Image 1 (tube, rainbow, N blue to C red):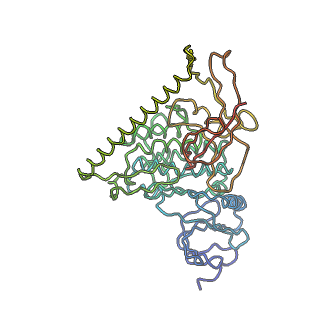
Image 2: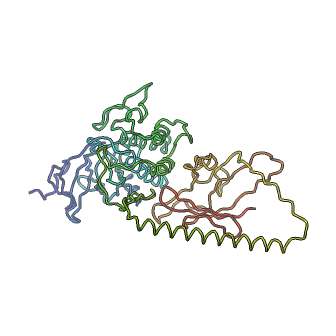
Image 3: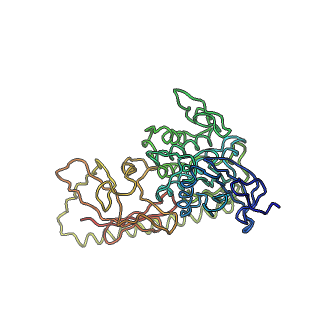
Length: 452
């Protein structure tokens, strides 16, 4: 009967039942002495992936350690580890089966639209940033590890586990996964893999020992996303410097995604959408809404008249406020005009992330220079959390700006800072200027501080 457990020391076959609940359906790959199966959890009636280990697999112990660590993450972009048993016969790891289509299979219909590609990789980068925050990396990103939804949703499989199965290591995990994400972005934009052919994708055209920029392979790729791809893939300086981490890549792509014309996934025509219907986007990305066309003229006239009335009332209110302010100022004058203090703009000469341990110990020190680079798209931000399971808590983190000349007239004052979640905006608290900013994880953070 098919319901019996496998004979000791034998790998299971299609149709077998493991652990009394996991029905094997289709073999989908082999790696590091293990076989991955598409299966059904008959207890919970859901599709899952189960990885079964052969006897004496050299990487089994590392894979189970990685699975236990990955199971503690709850980010929606990272495929969940649902079950693992290293004492079963055979040992197995069960993970979530993602919705959507795997990238290598999706691209058989052609490249994704630039907007779809940017949103998908931005979501994937946000998930990996959360994993890095928890001390985990992927290191084996490929077209078979990214699943894509129709509206830019992303799901990454194999976090930490794939690297354990292959023995993959990296001196700089941030940079390694950023390069991996950039390759996925390149493939999504062009349908080619930068380097040798992989997972059914042809090798991208190359020049000078590296893949040509996406815009040269597919002219419809916008210049902004082409530049971000090259900065992440090759470390090009470009406008804003090289992209060195998933958090930075997520922020860059989120900043330009809204300016890219929205397409329908593969390069075919965009999917029809009901006018005024909101498009569902992954967490942290700006929502887009299609505006209905052909509004009745009568409604347009009413809106125009209402806007004119509001404008007149606003002008009257501002004029009254200015008059009252002038009268109040006249009563307070002594007859001798006050000399206006000459205002001087101070240009920061340098910037560094600052934390409780001193300079360089703040969050994301590699992003500190973006606080003063003059580019409205880039910025320094703190770490953020995808769930309430906070880790690495500290008293505060900020960037310290050192002003330029004239040095003899400016005294540097350190700032004490506390971060909390607040509505987006700018406000003052206890006499200290505070600001709020949205990060790629969708959170809005406030910095409130005092000078000493």
